[in-house]
Length: 231
Image 1 (spheres, rainbow, N blue to C red):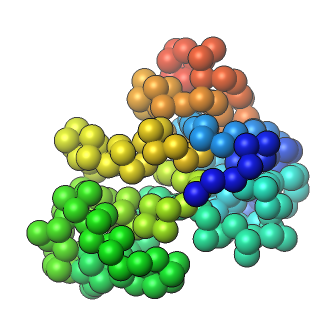
Image 2 (cartoon, rainbow, N blue to C red; image 1 turned 120 degrees about the vertical axis):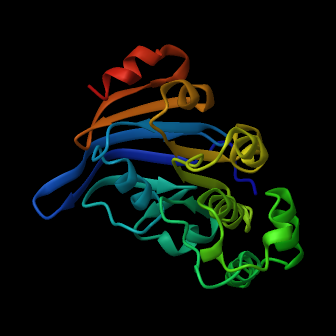
């Protein structure tokens, strides 16, 4: 789960992504080193989810340079997909399958040992409900299973879209060792929480209308500056 320290986990330069004639991202720059966290702030429609989808190789950039874990996108997307863990708004799970069946399916996709499934079900305290269809579980429980899926294959980079949505404080503490800063992975985290997001950030990117209006080390950014993005 490591890569050479001289290789940036993430490099963005002048990235543009369009939907038709509208720029969803326009001139986005950022660099994230191994083990660092980039937290992306911005109102709804700012381009946060589009950025994650570009980094996850689900969307191609129309202009600019994107490199993830040393691989240039989109040309080397094939080489990096298995090294990324994406936690999106949608849990990327099958509602008719159980939590255990979902995780076993993803384990087979990544060539991961089945023991890892049981380990993660225990880590997110879903062992007792693991054999119930996902459609019968609460949103918070589904989110815990989705987090287990995200880290199942021990990815080097985590892409997290509002990862603590639907989780109560106890559940947040439960999943923090898997997806929090202490996990040691490079992370890109989209957040609407100025205080909580800044606490997890090494680098802050603020977007508005797809354009970067803030890019700085987290230590130099205030909560008031983040709040201003939403005005």
